[in-house]
Image (cartoon, rainbow, N blue to C red; front, side):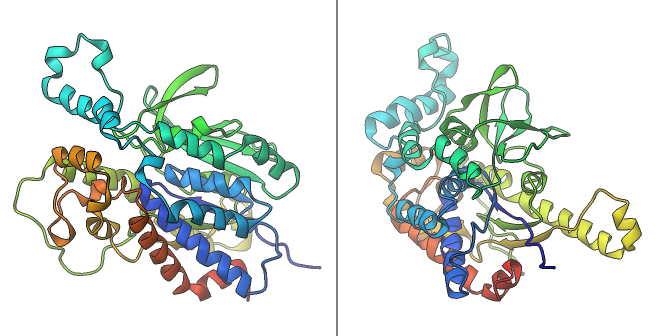
Amino acid sequence: MGSTVATTGLVLTGGGARAAYQVGVLKAIAQIRRDSGHAADPNPFPVTTGTSAGAINAAALACRADDFDGAVDGLCEVWQDFHAEQVYRADSFGVIRTGARWLTMMSIGWAIARWRRARPRSLLDNSPLEGLLNTLISTERLHRMMREGHLQALAVTASSYGSGLHVTFYDAVKDIVPWTRSQRIAVRDSITVPHLLASSAIPFVFPAMALKIGDHIEYCGDGSMRQAAPISPAVHLGGERILVVGAGRMHEPPGERAGASEYPNLAQIAGHALSNIFLDALAVDVERLQRINSTLALLTPEARAATSLKPIEVLVIAPSQRLDDIAAKHLGELPLPIRTLLRGLGVQGQGEDARGAALASYLLFESAYTRELMALGVRDTMQRRDDVIAFFGWA
């Protein structure tokens, strides 16, 4: 009797422009897959999940689940030639309409709060992203991939500003019952561009999106907020082994990191807050899963059969370098109106003298930065080539 191949789930985390790193990882995996003689195999990720910008990459992969190499090539074409104008309004008029008004409201909002039209919804206007997503994502094609057996499930996550719930929207071939956990719910729905816009709506930076949850409408933002268990959706949707691609360092190198005695500016505080939102939950969830696996390994076969828990093999690939430091080298490549806006928040300097680079690292949709992140993703994955081959059983 032949062995059954475990269902592989893919988890792509959030991080705005940092998600370029994920594309480099996927590019390397596609190369390893071809080199191992498995290019003709079915889609390596029948269960695909993503959060924030990772949700966009996940949906683009799922739409071309019948051609993994072609899907990765398509993502590479987008990310290696990125410009900020493809994601948000970066012209002077667009920045004045959103960012300048937003900063004005923060300073003298008490004087003009009664003028409702003067209340901007976000720092930046991401309407160009909607046009880009309409060229990348097709709900009809997603359904076709499922009908033809190339894809088992797709899930993207968002966070409701009204209820405070972390919401996973999913579509699947099997009749998977929606799950409910503390502060987390799942909603079965067809994944559309508005779901992706909501999932990638970085708090304060991009506007919330109205989505239907049950029988009512709620405004939702970035799915990385209140995300206690990033790996959970892939497991609920049938993933038996999970590849997780991060968008930030999982662990800092040993030794002290240089600090600063100056009072932090708004950009530094915002960057620190975003890092907390996007990066910390993943490390905690991976450690939790590893503890469960270790506990199950200590049980007898009879005891394991009596529990609903099951061991989940996890491979995590995350940046070996600080993406903040890479972003610091590329601050000058942002469009002038955006640089001017961010300077008002405290983003200044370049390289080792930069301040606020953490915040800018999420907004640097410029090709020099995204290409460097993609190259890092390729290098980090190739250095773990043996782990990738063992994980997929491609030896």
